[in-house]
Image (cartoon, rainbow, N blue to C red; front, side, top):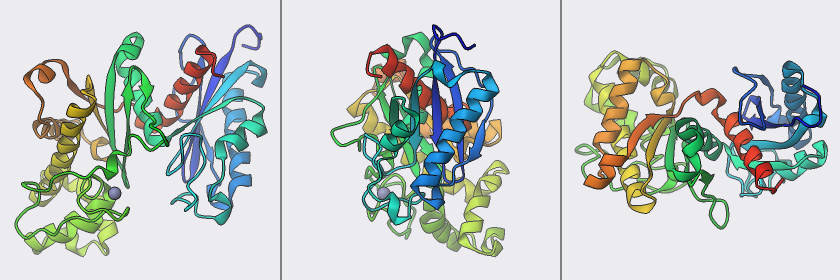
Length: 344
Ligand SMILES: [Zn+2]
């Protein structure tokens, strides 16, 4: 396809090691069905990273046989914290620690480089947008959803009428740092969990890999003395092995995942009273597992979510699909929506 009357948008998902890219045509059809990755070079600073984003765009266009002239807009997502316009936090961030990144306008820099409109979302919001559109298709603009994605931290987003809820400063949908009640969640003598953000007892302090390492595993290893994971070498190494034990129905691992499911259920209970969504999505490492364990976990999240009778009749619980491609795809959906609405 090279005719200028046919056009596409490109989605770029920026990560700590790789950029993934996709192409979406004007009818809403994805032209790439697998990961299309190049190294992201974010640790070398903004200049090499913007080069790498352009390279990802060129490579995915080459793989689909599409000229750059056919691209109307580009969607970009990165890990946060960044504001709604794609300016990285003044304090930097895990992936953007070099001083040149602090306060850097990555969206604007890519827009200048490409000479194309660039629409920005953080990675959790982009994945939430993709999950929403994959679930609802043509009805997406009449539906709402909330997505919780359990990884190193707890990301996700809130979608209303098919669009990301950004808030006044771009900080809406920071679901990991919503405080939740710990009453009935913590076991006897279990310390109040602390989050990297400085808060105690927020969702991420329990429902994240970091939460397992810092808070859940140190406690549960005292309750299951002699457990194999005590000999894993480090808490970080042990934390990454917990899911495998869960799949084998190890009692300690099930206690840990039950607490994570309860934390997500308490978050979704808050969501039920705030935006009353049609669908509650769960994604991330916690559900990238065997079908049996995945279904068990989703059922436990549902069991811990308190819905009114009317809500329970309408709402459903689902997994974020194609998580490794969800960021790029959600970014492309945001770019297509901007073009269609005349904003790009
Ligand atoms: Zn936090």
